[in-house]
Image 1 (cartoon, rainbow, N blue to C red):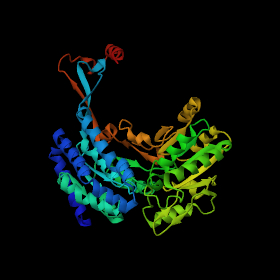
Image 2 (tube, helix red, strand yellow; image 1 turned 90 degrees about the vertical axis):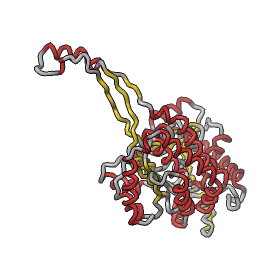
Image 3 (cartoon, rainbow, N blue to C red; image 1 turned 135 degrees about the horizontal axis):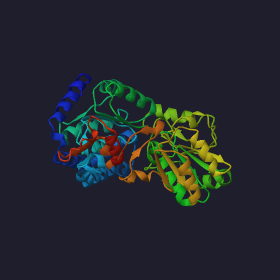
Image 4 (cartoon, rainbow, N blue to C red; image 1 turned 90 degrees about the horizontal axis):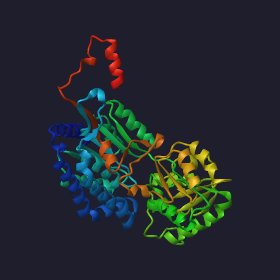
Length: 459
């Protein structure tokens, strides 16, 4: 789509929504089935694009992109009829006889701005929610994942209703032009700086936004945890996609008395997963998205105590799984979201010292707690805040479609996935219906002390 065509296409989608066609359950089901068909039939091409963009291995491409989308669609198709039903609520005595309910209603035309780290999933998952809710959708894939973006732009018109969907490729110019348009909701996945730009643009039309922004997600490891399972799960979710995951553990907190044991186990696990040459020849290890991000991540290592890894190759955009011991908490490594394969390890005298350290920082998108101590688990849960929490595992909450996914504070606002996504892209309209019978005049003038007395009793 050309820059000058953006406004015309958005207006066409708004006009199409006004026809009411997208409101029917048949249309919604048909479009969800078509997304599933597109994902299944084009699985090979999607995986090829992910290899070209990120060197993403087949298993990660399936589990975190293709398989994830298929699962999201299946869940939506299973729950859609129930989600669309009016939701009955009680009616107070003062409003009897009558009934009250909440009616989900599509918002209209929505904009989904995806991210480059999971370039198929992070565009199509919100689209599934928006379609389930009965909206028209403009998709903006990330230009940094150029091959996946081009594939989405090619496939969407082939499989989905051309009047209800539009794909806009491009960079800053195209995004800026998109944000000038009137949408009924905007969902953006990415960084905090651009999130602020999106929110400022949305304010022009008082457009509601959902922002998924990431942050520095802490991982607390107590010495009571099963060490072998713990390091396996941390290593898996930290170095999946070479650390370019918004909910990857950003740093680990352990007690000083336990750190040597933990580091030795983590080194052994990295070697087991990716080979003794620090993953350079591993077919299961991704690459950094581009040179700018490669240089940014390496910059975080300047002056740090690297205790494992650190190897890198600019030509192949490779950075090895890397462990850094006790970085300065004011260093760029600990002030910015790493979004790469570097894992700082922070030592504390006692594990509860992690709580004030976490609370002194912006609220994270995710937090991980590894412990067998129930009291410690409860204390951390009660005294800290995070968008999502996983206890004794890493990012597995993403596999449960019944759990809303979203941030808090600077890590984002709003949520989606499953029913939560349907509600994000719906207006939950309050409706009360009353009978013409029994029209008691207590509320009508002229007011009397007796009327006030009865209204108080009925309220």
